[in-house]
Length: 463
Ligand SMILES: Cc1ncc(COP(=O)(O)O)c(C=O)c1O
Ligand SMILES: N[C@@H](CCCC[NH3+])C(=O)O
Image 1: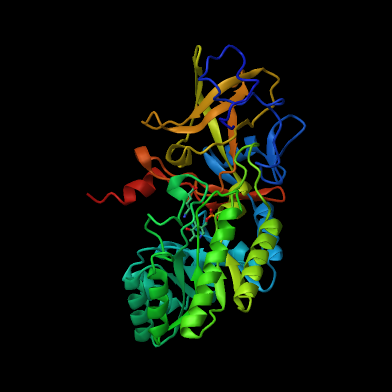
Image 2: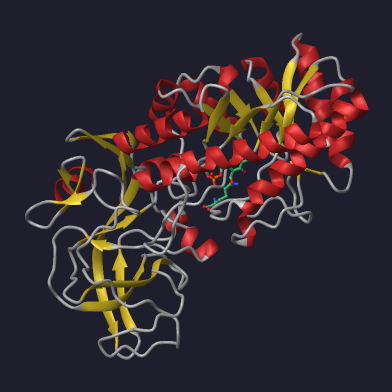
């Protein structure tokens, strides 16, 4: 729900900070297709289903909280990105959003490449069968062990992020007797319109080498001087959950500008540019993201135009969507435990998960929708806050939500668009075992990441 001012304001006697809440939706049972995975709908009894499987059966078989992922939707989004960018471009799925071996298999089958940013993600990528040549390795402080493993595995691209790393990757490649493909992560000086914690291309932050400050150009010089490195291109990632294409336009223009300067200074035309990920998705009905076709068209046009002006051949473009592929494909299912009406304020609805399975609300003030999922209801809307079971008052899943006033303990609530950065950022806070991820397709559900157990947690406790 947006917290922008809404003329209709709150109803049902709630006293609220002025201009803070949208009006309740006209139909609390409606599932806006913008925020729900494609096969999600209500059945005739009013229960939410995904790929034909009802949430009550899912909760019974897999427990709650749990993430349910619509596999057909995931694959369709992969295909849409692939088709939009075409054969002369590459789509690298950003594994940080959510990665498992099954996901890697789907990506491989659907013709996507993979961006990893840790040894753990690399292991999962390789275990899932992603050809190493289709992997790009990121990170602002890769360890020597990670670099050696990536080089040893034959990873196609290492995106170097510092002067030290140019030397480290060059040394690892020399030692392995290979020439390693690299790109240079460039800070293009764009202020992306998103939460400051997830903006990554303004000057004052840890990622990348500065275009304006000259360190990117110096990194190019150093990389070109290393015989064991093949400098393939430049990389820019401006941030995450971005709707406004203008940041990408500025970024593309500046990256192409640097390509031209490299040609002028070194006499080489680098063949690739990667414009990163960061495309926003709809968390609530108020969000209007662009589709991959529009994005591909816009990026191609900008890069094409800039290259023409600079007299450069069109480089191979790549992008790294994470959230835009997996985010909308999953919802988290919770069971309501307690209901606490605070007269004049709102009703606190406590569920059996919380900030351990979705830290995004606490960390970024993220907004989510929520629906009563185990049944439909004709009760009037009640202003609610969906909270978790952790020992923090900031343990909020959905800050402002309208739920039917008859929502009760035992009901199942579903929070959509939790496919990205929820399971991958989940924690064991309060010694909470992390929830499973269950893929649902064609009327069948199967666990792809199992639920942690208390035994799993105790296994690490060797004191
Ligand atoms: C280098 C890089 N590429 C891709 C992504 C994926 O971003 P998103 O999931 O917002 O598409 C990120 C995360 O922001 C990133 O740091
Ligand atoms: N984890 C963030 C985005 C940062 C992605 C990695 N650079 C989120 O949930 O929105």
